[in-house]
Amino acid sequence: MNKPKSTCSLSLQVNDVSWSGDVPVEETLLEFLRVRLRLTGTKRSCESEVCGACTVLVDGRSISSCSYLAFEADGKTVLTIEGVATGDILDPLQEAFVRNIGAQCGYCTPGQIMAAKSLLMENPDPSREQIAEWLSGNICRCGAYGAIAQSILEAAQEYRSKR
Amino acid sequence: MLDSLQLVQPTTVAEASEALAEYGDDAKIYAGGAELLLLLRQGLLQTDILIDVKKIERLHEISWDRKTLVVGACVTHQSLATDSSVREHAPSFAYAESQVANVRVRNQGTLGGNLCFNDPHSDPGTVLLVHEAAVTLGSRKGEHEIPLRDFFSDMYATALNADELLLEIKIPPLPIGMNSAYVRLHRYQRPTLGVAAAAKMDNGTVEDIRIAVGCVGPTAQRLPELELKVKGMKIADAKRIFAEQKNYLRDRLRPVTDLLGGAEYKLYMTSVFLNHALEKAVGNGVPNT
Image (cartoon, rainbow over all chains, first blue to last red; front, side, top):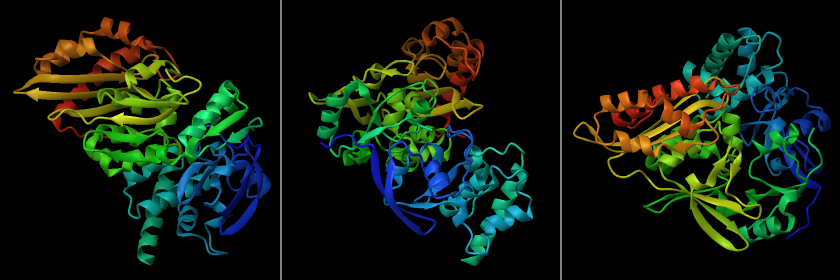
């Protein structure tokens, strides 16, 4: 049995870029992304897995990066809001959010888009009810829910027509 | 920010047992962190060492041996909600798992972590009581099994000793002819009330019934006295009995007033949801959302 260690070696891909190094055990993925990698699109908010502002995808699955220890991402791929567009070309989800005004203050938007991304990866043709259920853990205090759901419906259609 | 932590990552149950024996109260078992990290951050729990049990392969398995569904402690809620053998042999449990918090928590949180944390406002345990599930606990001294109802000792407390690890949850299917339903009331991420019912009907009367209620008091529990009372009754009479049991439910469930609702409100809604759960169980056995 190994002695307890206070750092872990971590090798992962973040938005298709490799990173390797040591991180303290208690460092959350949110801190790793925002402080170490300066990827500040992912937001810190409730810090209790309720609001969804810190949503990122780890191996395609959405998690709350505020309550996910960074060492857990070893060997995995992480997608954040910064990795959703391809260069200057916005993802259909981002286009649809802009078109429908799917954001007011915008604080929750990275989390909303990452949650929507994971939904469309799993279910390319969601109903409005399935969207509401999947995004029930992403709070928008401005109340842009209608426009968010509409944006996801439109983006889903665009994803499907591109395939 | 979390305070400094140290990490141990055993890869076998034996290694985990050694680590638990050695570090005992200075350590906490880490099975996903969905609950543990919240408590550490809020200062409600202190620990120096995390014993990460997710590297132990055995704890990630779901198996069906034609008699019992065996779920490793580190299987996530999302896996349970979508697994075909779970949906076949314990459909109401799969449904309850699909309702846990939100998809992020379901992707990260594990059944073992959930049961060991024993938050009174939780879904899976209530349905598992109706299945008469058991848990396998392991330590340096070996493994033993206890019924889940004995494992839930109090609010945020279980029968797990400091040197023990929850290994597996054994879920027998319901007896042939018995159908179940789980109904829940929720306003926030955690449920305000959860009721599980399973019933076998014989010519319009309740031949056999199992009922469990969660979230109202300190822990989820079965209601054996109420089950006995409604056996042999027609559905309409059983529902009338449910409505008359306020004093029994108060004594048995010990309702707690909290952010999710007042004690009297929860008691009232328990009667209402006992009716819903029974109706759904005998209707088609498939709970609706």
